[in-house]
Amino acid sequence: MSESAPSDSPPAKATLSLLRYRTQAPAARARVLLPQHLFTFLLEGEKTVHFAGAQVTVRPQQFILLAAGNCLMTEKVAAPAMYYHSLLLLFDHQLLTDFFSRHAAWLGRPSRQAASQPFLLFEQDEFLGHFVRSLDCLLRGTQPSIPRELQQVKLEELLLYLALHYPGQLQQLRSLSQEATDEVLVRQAVTSHIGSPVAVEELAFLCNMSLSTFKRRFATLYGTSPSRWLLARRMEKAAALLRQADQSVSELSEELGYENLSSFIQTFKQFYGLTPKQYQVAG
Image (cartoon, rainbow, N blue to C red):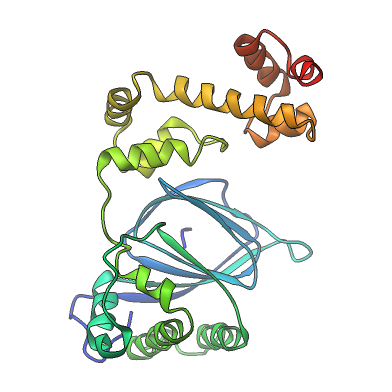
C-alpha cells in the first residue's frame, strides 16, 4: 500500500482522498508511482522515501508532503505495538494551484527557484497535533465515506496554517511539479544514492526511465556503466570512512548496503589490494 484536495470552487476534475493506512506487515522497499501530491501523517512506525535526487526518513510526530512522481518507499513497524500506522491526504496539483491563486494577495509572489527537493518535512506542533487527531476522528466516524467538501476544508485548513507558520516551505510547493531534465535526474539519482543499497533498476525507476534508457544516458554522461561507477564511488567512500577509524568493518559493510561481509571484503581488496582491516591499520 502506498501512501488525492480543497478550494471554494475547485476545478471539476480535481480529486482528493483522506485515507488510513495501518498494517503489521509493511512491505520492504517498494516502487511507488504517486499520481498526486501526498501528505503522510505518521502515527506509528518509520518511513524512508527515496526520490531521484533525495531521500528522507519520517518518524512519529512528523509529517511529510511528497510531490507526485516516482519514489521508493520502505516502512518499518514500531515496538511495542509492532504495526505501521499513518493517515494519508492525497490531492491533485490543480487544487494546489487553485489555493495559491485564491490567496495570492497575502501569500506573495511565487519563487522563481525550483524546489530543492521533492518533499517537505514538518515537525508536529500543538496545533498540528490537534489537526492530525481531527483527521483520525473523521476516519473513525460511522459514515461510510467522508464528504468531499469536508475533505476540502481540512486540506484548506492545513495549507493556510502552513502558509502562516512555514511561509518559506510553502513557497516551495509552487514548484514541486516542475520537471528536471533527464541529465539532471540521472546525476541526482546516482550522486544521492552512493551510500544507499539501491539497485540500478530502482534508480532507473526513480528517473522514470526504462533500464536501457537510463544506462544509455548514464554512459553518455559518465563514460561507464552505472554499476561500475557506483561501485567505485562506494569503495571510495568505504576507504574514507576506514581512514577515520571510528567504524568496524562489519558496521561499514552494512552502511554501504552489503548483506554479505565477505563480499564487501573481497570487492574492497580488488580495488585497493588490501582487506578493509589491513587498509584501516595501514592508514
